[in-house]
Structures are given as C-alpha cells and as structure tokens.
Image (tube, rainbow, N blue to C red):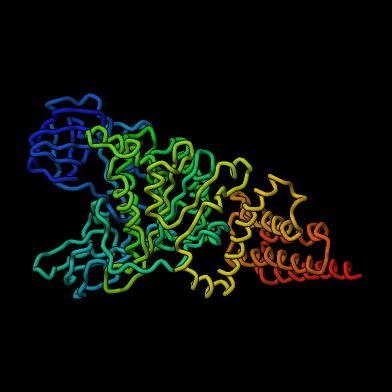
Length: 589
C-alpha cells in the first residue's frame, strides 16, 4: 500500500505528498484514526483528498495510506431496512460501538458479517453462466427476495454450488471462467459508486410510474425509469410529496437519501417510515426501503458521496428486475458541498460560486436512471426512477442548481409558496409545471385507462389556463363584467382546483387515488362544464347552474371507497343530467 504524508489541511480537504503511485478516486486512510477519504485531484506526486470525517487535529507530516481501491459499496442481503450514512456505514452498528454521537475513524462493515442468510440455489453444477445471471435467491424480508447474481464481467461454468445458510462473505458457488481463472461467488458483491452498473439495453419511457396523486398522474406524469425534479421554497411541501411518492408509487423498492437536510427532518423520516404500513403488502414500509442519512450537521464531503451511494444501491435492485424509486432530498445541499470543495481546491468559480462542472455532475447522476433490459441470459426488465428535491434559496428557481436540473430532467413539479399559504396541497403549480413524457405515454393511458384520457387531460389544462387569463380581467373590472359563459368557465376551473387537484395526504381514502377514479372524476367535472354551457344556450340563468345540488356529490366523489367506481360515476352523471334538464325545462316554460 502506497503511503504519503499530509502537506496541508483546509477543512475537509487534505493535500498529501509522495502519492505518485495512487489513482484518482482511490480511497485513503488519513492519520492515526484512519479517517476515510477519497482522492479527487492529482498533481504529480501531490494528491488532494476529500475527507469524509471531521479533520480537526490533523497536521503536516501525518501519514496518509491508500487502499488502492475506489470508493465502493457492498451489495447483498442486509440492505433492506438498513439506515446508512453517506459512505454506507450502518448507523445502528456505529451506535452500538460509539453511542449516540458519531466518533471519528469508526470502522464497521456495511453489511452485517455475523448474520446468516438462507440461500436457495437456482442453478446447478455444469450450467454456463454470465454476468447478471441469477444463481440463487435469499428471502431478505417478507416483501423482498434478493436475487444472487453473477457479478458483471464474469462468464464461465459453475463447478460448485449448494443451498444452505451463509454469511454474506462466504462462498456459495465456484465458477470456472472462460479465460481459465476461477471466480468465487459470495452473497455480496462490491461496486464502485461513481461507475454506473451495466445493462443490455435502455427502453423507451412509455409506461407511467403510477403514484396515486391526481395532479401528478393526470397532469404531469413521470415515466417508469424517468427523472423528476421537485423545487420549492421552505414549507411548500417537498418532504410530504416525497413521502407520498415513497409510500404510494408503483415501485418495488424505495431508496431514500437525506442529503444535507436538517436533522429533525431526517428524524421524522426515520420515525415515520417504520410505522407506515405499506398499502400493497400490509407490512411496514421499511421492509422494502433503504435509508441513507447524511444530515446538515454531518461532514460536508460525505454529502457528495451519499448521492452516488444511494443510486448504486438502487441500480443493484434494478438489475434484479425490480422497479426502484429513488428520492434525493435535496440535490441543492449536494451542490453546496461541491461548491465548498471546489472553493478549497481553488478552482475557477462559475455562477454564484458553484463549480463550472455543476451541470455535468448533475447530468451524470440523473442519467443513471432508466427502464432497462438487465444483463444475463434471462431478459429481465428493471426500472430506476429518480425524484430529486431542490431547495432554491428564497424559492428563486433562477438560481444555478435549479436551472442546471431543469436542463436535464423531463418532469418539473414546481411547488408554490402561495398555494401552500392557501393550504392547497400538493402545492404543485399547474401553470409552471410540466412533463415531457406525455407524448410517449399517450398510447399507454389510452389503452390501459380509457381512450378519452389524453383528450380529457388536455381540456382540463385548457380550462385552468383560461381561468388564469380571466382572473386578470376580474381583478381589473370585477366579476360582473364577465359573460355567463366565462362565469361557468371560472366555476368549472375552481371545481378542478378544489375537487381534483387538491388532495389530502393524511385522509384515509383521499391519500391515494387510482387511475380509474381519477378518470371518472375528471369526466364528471367536464360533464358539468359541457352541460352548463349547453344550458346557457337554452337561455338558462347562470346562478341556477352554479347552485345545482349535484355539485356537492361531484366534489365528494373523490372520497368514494367502494369497488364499483363506474357505477358510482354513472349515478352522479345521471343525476347531473336530470338536474340540468329540469333547469332547461323550467326556462322553456
């Protein structure tokens, strides 16, 4: 192992000499306490190391030893339900050793070495296998079965394999490789975090990640394997939106990264997730969740690693054929860590002091999402969807992190402080948000929900946009200046806002809305608008139309909890037609 000495210490940055034999991104151990660091820059025999722990007490002449390996994560049984820090150290195991306060230099294996797992082989001696092939399974929780796969880059013939109870670092199979070497396969594999895991082929994002949130699924849907951004000011509901997606999104595995957020916010996640009941399985949500906690009071440099640690774990589950949702809260704090390290490296600053490579680093992270055909002889389909929260200072999305993110992601859910102030949640502004996946997913919605879905969605959006234009007129000249048609238009848009877009995350029924219910509610709102316009053509009074008794039933349709949604829709639709007909008949008399 190459050993050097410290030349200079500047916060989390350490400059070390005599490191000529080292490589970029090698992990090093710094000082007597063996603090973990990573080489991020090389100049001749001088290496710049970002240290993932507090560096106080270090000084010139202190030894720096390289491990010769890049920063890697351990992938295997024991990931689900665990809480790691930014460099995949298990916080529960550290607490047993060091107590409630993190101590420097604590070395704990990422996956528990003392626990045995029941391995069931799915291959036999003599089978020819290649990277990505499943050779067996381990039941990790009641909900998740881990597929034990041949690591990428290994191909050959199995010479030994057997079912049984194993520790994660014990050999479960031997493979005679095609080049004549022998590979020993354990339940665990290691993978460098900065390198994306390979796959056979990336698929088109033409299938939605159904979330049960009406404003998202209907107006601004995200594709399975898609990327979305949730920017918003303090108090606008970013964390609740991410909690809702973690709980209800159509994903098998959830990876939640708390990157640089306040400690009490992460504490809420740690307290709530184990208590939340997963609606799909009836078990605790933690039985399909991996948590990575790197709060604002933890070392700044580790924020940068936490994002990569999380997405590498997510890719591992994607390779098994699972649909994975990754929540990163928030990428702004990650960018601030980049800015701090860039400043200490004395690099030329870009806009607002962020490094010039901010955009490319963000792109490298988000590009690892996607719906793919995985490696191996069986063509498994896996998906990794990434939802990144952005916390722009003062809610100003013209700042560099928000703008760099918008150039990369295809879904933008813009949270609005004014909507949050009015208690309209989710506070996603329908005039500024967008989804670029609409075109590719049109066929799926029309085939799997209803052929009218996209047409209805388009009409809904038009009404909301026309309402914004009419609002300007009302502010100037008052409601009385509007025509009867425009008044109906405003009332229909108000119904869309209050009955459709507003959704109570804490209501037992309204917290999740299936696509079928979303469609029929959308249809009822459009029928009210169409029938009212028709009644106006017959000379009906606009005030009578605005006070129809059926309107309360339309508004309460979202709380319907029965199985026959179509029948309930038909009942309300029939009553709407009856009441409109009565108003028209009365006018005719």
